[in-house]
Image 1: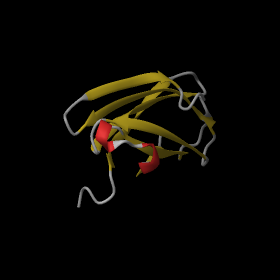
Image 2: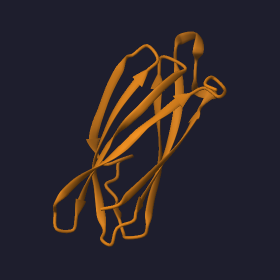
Image 3: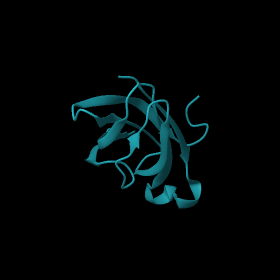
Length: 121
């Protein structure tokens, strides 16, 4: 099963409040089904870590209120957000998918960085 996941992140300055340790980030994810059969995204799991080492786990059904079925050679994209207490952090996790035959599999989402522009060189 080949599912390709790409992530783009950005800092949302207008919603952030650095004086009160509130840094808002958006992340856009594209999930591409490179297999020969449809798959349905059932669940998500995230581990969010800030620069202080604080870890938060988030899990639940679907993404942004949906449990999309992705046809072969098609993709599904969405954008969501995250609030950190520091100007730098990471996210990682996995999605749980279901094949047409109802068998389940997990696809790892490699760690990606949330950071203010130019904070990490």
